[in-house]
Length: 498
Image 1 (cartoon, rainbow, N blue to C red):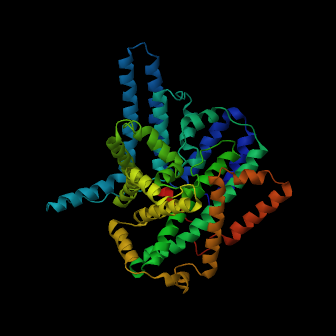
Image 2: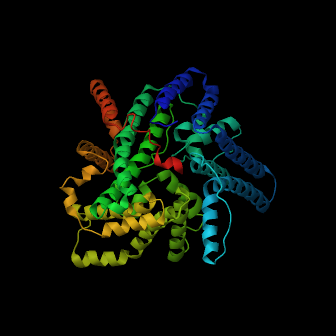
Image 3: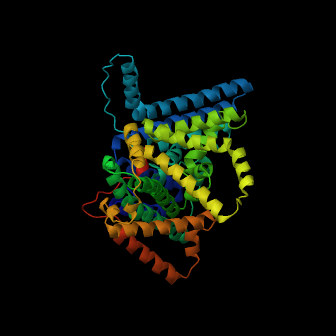
């Protein structure tokens, strides 16, 4: 069931109505049933995977708590607590690796043996990747680690914990919530609050704008160019690559925003997964503002346990590259994702290494780092570096990625900006104009957010007639300008594949 489907727009009001009518003490049961129904609309059988992950980490948490209460020596306690964590991680990551990486590993084994002239006759395994498996697996594992570290209690109520793992607004594409942020509120259901309903609707409207007006419109242009990249050169591919960065952002930010809005309707707060990343002045800053729930997960459960920046510069760089290697692999079972991840890690490492040189150049050239021009240059360079790495994210294989890069450098053709040829790349002039105007709204809203101004809260402060007029106009605009119709299939959110 997609957020941008008629089924969801029927499902959500029913869930809301029943949620606030039934007694609070059984509300989590209703939300659990609703969440499993929501997921089973894709594939009913794969609900067993969520149940398996839930059961393993639930028992792991109970086991850790039991060990902690025993009158054992500290070393023995820690040993058995670590065993509970290890078993939980191995079982969950084992299932994740089977469904997501089996064919990737087999393909690489065939390639490796072929290099030494040995043919492996291992058939492809027909595996359908469960929607959102990486998200709910990481959420369950974070709970296990938090219990081990003593940051959260071990939940005794299995069904309440099951709701934490499967909470439908953020089940299939995040944000990846922490147990201390969501599990505790689920144990104390909120009262019905009209203000939450109003705020949730505004947040969802913006999410739908990002998805159906911007991301899905940009996708038409990007898919057209990348689908036939051999016949395009120079600036057309550059524009498609830059637009893909915006599409990826709007698609995932749109899902996260709708998820946050949906949870707000129910009275729960989810983490804001994006914080105006394209206004960042360095790649490191961009990654602090991009997919925040995943990046903080890697920071807390991989980077810091590896030693973080506590064991010298060389070890810090190795840890950072390793984290981005794993992050790339998390996004997909393809070397293109690994290269994408490691490129962003290398950007940060090179940026840190060059700090002394950059400081010297600023001093020699007498540059003002606080000037608009200097900040603007840093922002543009950061955005272009991220967009370039997106070639590998978008490409289906390494050959395609390098083919795109080769064709970008093959011709300098700035005239495509004026001769109307861009309007033959899937979007006519009207839709191309709508795309540019919508991007203007996006970057204006992000600029306010970058400055710490909440747009939907500002709207909530206005007179009721203005709010209703703006809301009605926004909904009409999304319905009229959004990408709908019989010739268009409801687009899955990009991150569903992860």
